[in-house]
Every structure is written in structure tokens, then in C-alpha cells.
Image (cartoon, rainbow, N blue to C red; front, side, top):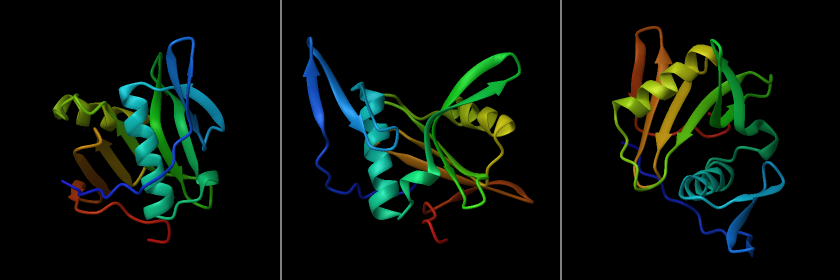
Length: 146
């Protein structure tokens, strides 16, 4: 498991017709504030402020094809050559991370091959690196210059 120290950040939140929205600085738009979105926005700030990734290299809810199905990766980080490097799958805090969650991100990795796979529910975070020996657990999320 990877320990995450989330940075303090002043989120822009608004209520409209009884629904809460949060401003996503990567997508540059207001999105519905669901429990999963709260985890995603906190993780984005962690990637930006703690790990140093530039917003221009981050895609949020990146659409991919899995056979006939269309799915969305929560967060994809690209390298400076515009190649996908890392996928993050976010779950709401009350959702337990199970092998089903790990299988989900592994399926995404078939369509969008990356070096690093991260799964988080905000409280718990697990990371993996693809190597010549297969998928290996990691103890830290790589930073931008790693």
C-alpha cells in the first residue's frame, strides 16, 4: 500500500439547484461533486502539488475502447512524448479496493498500455509497475521527473 499525504487545497465548490459541483482545473469545467469525484479531485491535486505533474500532461476521464465497449479511465498521465505513462482508477471512499478493482485497471491497460497502474479510494492506494517480469507492486508513486 502507498501512503498518500494529500495537500491542502482550496477547492472551488458551488451549489446549483440542490446539487454540488466542483471545478476541475484539469478539464477546466464544473463537474458534479460525487464521492468518487471528490477522491479524483484530491488525487489530481496530489499529482500536481506533491508529485509535480504539469496539468497539460494529465487527462481526466479519458475514453478508451475495450473491444466493443467504451470505458473511461479516471486519470491518465502522459509523458513529454505524449505517450501514456500512468493510469489511476479512483473509487469512492466507501468502496473497498478488491481484486475486481485491480482487474478493472488491468483491462484498461490492455487498451491503453502504461508503465504504472494506480488504484485508490482516497483512504487506500495501491500501485503497480509493469516490468519484464510482469506486474510488480510499488511503494511510491513516481514523480514527474522520475
